Image (cartoon, rainbow, N blue to C red; front, side):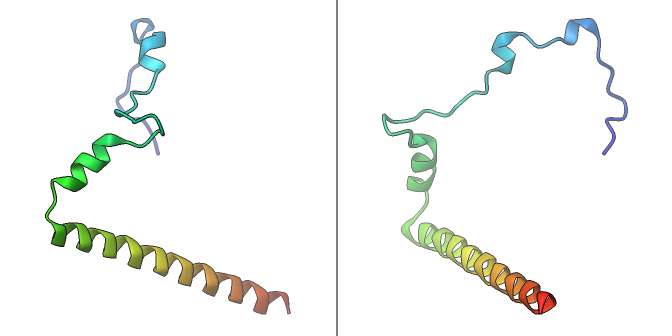
Length: 77
């Protein structure tokens, strides 16, 4: 992918504070508190729906991985 139309000048050099990635607020265990707050804004039904979508996505990914490994095994035989 090209960066068309992007012009870099000497004034565009990054300072050290621009290099530091901003991290969200975390508790002492490194848990992202903004994600917890975001989920608490959802209704219980919305949280269940969101969790179920994640679960189904993970199961689908596992299924695709299994299918890929089976195809690789068949090709090796």
